[in-house]
Length: 110
Length: 113
Image (cartoon, rainbow over all chains, first blue to last red; front, side):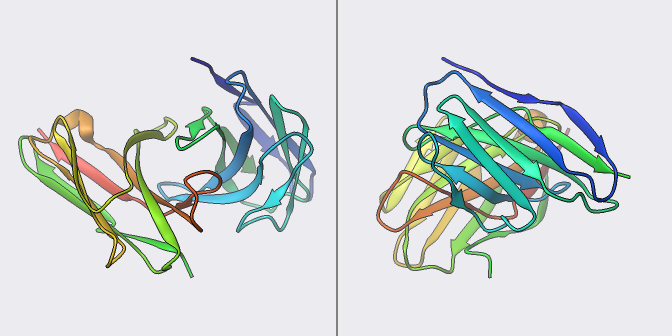
């Protein structure tokens, strides 16, 4: 078994601020993902990475940067937080078919 | 345009009833489908996957797939209040079960005791 941890659990930012979210996995999975989920809605892919130092854009990459410096970690940066933005950011990892998700980071922008 | 569409958006069923959820893709490159379940305040967890035409049953849950129409459905019999959750359908495309998934917007299931 393994676990995915995301930090921080809650993130409150100001409009225009640069914000960084972190994700760690100990499954030894090759592929990692960042998704955004708005309240009660589906998941939209922001970035994914199939190996260390690889980055692939998803459908929602504009306004975000990502970094995969180690196999076990994947960071996401909101380059300029938008006022009144509220969403949960979910990190996931996979080796094959099944994706395993972390508990999420809940972002609120004031 | 979203590649995976789910219906209905929300569904209310009585305890012990049958819940039927639908999922269709608009992209002919779809090859594999997954169903994930997300309880309120929790992260999604894979419930079932289906790769071939036909039906797959696991306990109270049955998944159907019609590859010609790119349609999959999830049926929950003897629904329980603990089944209340957001059900997400996901599809992979391009001839590989690996890599990115395209998720639908989800069906919110509420089971009334």
